[in-house]
Length: 616
Image: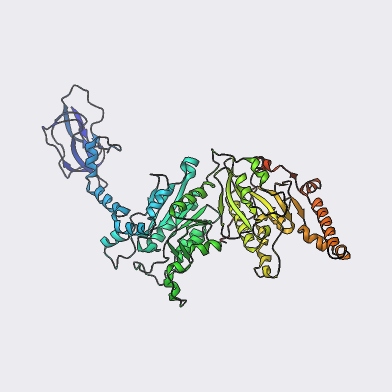
């Protein structure tokens, strides 16, 4: 006989067998209750059950004899007198799996989860597609690796129970209009750990993507995780701002919201991307404005107040498409990357995030010989410095930012042998490469961005200096261009300067992190020319008396050209290198090699102060 003993102090709830019953191993014998939890006891082997020593309702101590089981098989009895049931964590039998799916609690969960999916709202999805737009969940599925997205707060509904039924809220306010979670972006390139990304998407098919009480709570939860775990954030920001219809909390103005401060707190800590399609107004736009970059579609609108707010303020009646169209917001610098549609926006977001996910293992180098032809032999002929950027960067890696604004300077992210870097370059096609207020703002903020996230900076210099003149001074350049010097003074990342052609005055110094010896190296191509100001102006100013002593006409012009050539020779790249004002003159085809060796030798310096990135 095998004793059936109580494994713990408990109360007998129910016997499932009677004396004399023939049992098989594993048959359920009785139910015990301890600490308000029920425990099953099973037969340890086949046999015949003997007398029951305790009845249902009686209390037993640990080890009390409950019954005995006479063994009927040839196998020896196990040491344990009885077995407490432990559910198999990995049921393999099809019958067990089917039975599990039929459980009422699981069915209730599956039915509730189904209401959060696009398939439950075909009309809303069809309307969305008719506008040429995607749903929030479609964008997230495109951004993240299949099967990687863990959704937080999916079962939330709008805080409107006092005015709407539960069934109505479940059917029509799924996830309270915002899908939030953590997924993998670019795991094939950077691995699973570096790919983890917080993704949040306002759902324009639910209450117009407005900001409600519950989705603010969801947002705050995700932002806290992003800061704690140092995870990048992608926000799909489409929506109409604050929602006045949430009435399930005692509020007056609804201004006790932590989301905006929490979102701003990520600045300089982790990469933050905002994607805008459709209409993005008020609070949604304010969050987008806190992002490192804004990626927007050409038919989108972005503004701090939508039509209702504008009209309510007595400022006129406007259609949504009249407020902050993407074409204007791209030209004024609000939008960093302008794309045709959401598919391109998601691709751009993946591309942007990749620069902050580590070094790429695979890359293709451009033809270095092409750099020799970038600068024309005619020193007065303009050219496009973007050809120099693409000639340095790994093939396919270049990502230009803020292309509609600050035309005097190009800013871009790129890779050199898989290593992410930031590139800046003067643009001779605009004002001859002179740096105006907008270009300075654009460049200084880009330097802050790279500095905060640890990307080395490469500066391609071709500027006659800062833009000057009475009209220009009305743009407050004294303050704006000085941002370049201040931003450079706080750099902790390696900085390299390459002078392509003109390196004149304060503008050239600003492009070289404040001075020609501030970068880790300052080199020039053979086409480099230097001076305290533009050579032509320097001749006219410095040799005014000599020129005026010559009669106007051919004689004066000949003297001017002679003096200009002297200035050009004196300020040539080779002469600059002989006086050690620059570190070297190099073959343009060697530029990439110089940069790669410089990157291999240098490390980041400690930050001077905080690493915040200006919103502008």
